[in-house]
Length: 260
Image 1 (cartoon, rainbow, N blue to C red):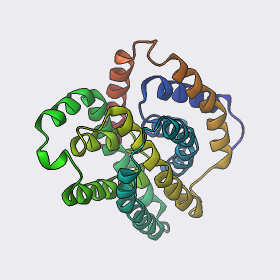
Image 2: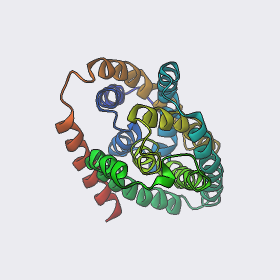
Image 3: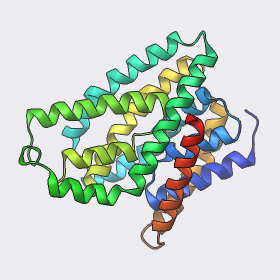
Image 4: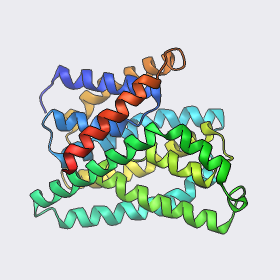
């Protein structure tokens, strides 16, 4: 893709918002790419590798802070990686019918955006509810807890591979219910650690199908990497509640339009 300053600015803006609010980059970047006229397949494939590169820095920081539960990350990956590979295989079989593949991704993307917007709006309330009503069986490690964690991984593997959305907001919210006594920083760090191999596998899978524009990827990273740094430095200093709610409403509207 030819150089477009608008794409660099888009990357800068999305990176800044992610650093400031913690809202998932995929839920913001993919709709932006669609707005620029990028086909759904290319938007999703490119955004997956974009997410893998940008989240690597997050894993390093969280590992240094010891806010990653590697056991939970492993159980999630046990479900998500095979689910991602299976979803890629199905998409590969749809490759001959580009219209069908674009329609599948567009429809899935719409629902992912709607669920993500709800997760962003009610994240704190969901956390309080999960901590208040979680059963004793989920306050400690158990076989049931591990099986359900794998099941969440399967859901995330399918959703992320189809839409590039879900590894952040949806993943963290679902983990709130299974691990209510795990601190929020550890939940976030664990989900970021899980998102890197998932988005990398899904992104490379899309690359084998020709669904990645590397010129586009470089332009997005040129803007987003400094944007994330600036946003992270301002995080906690700028009230982000209004911004989060505005983003959630915007994502809901975009998702609704994609579905209907």
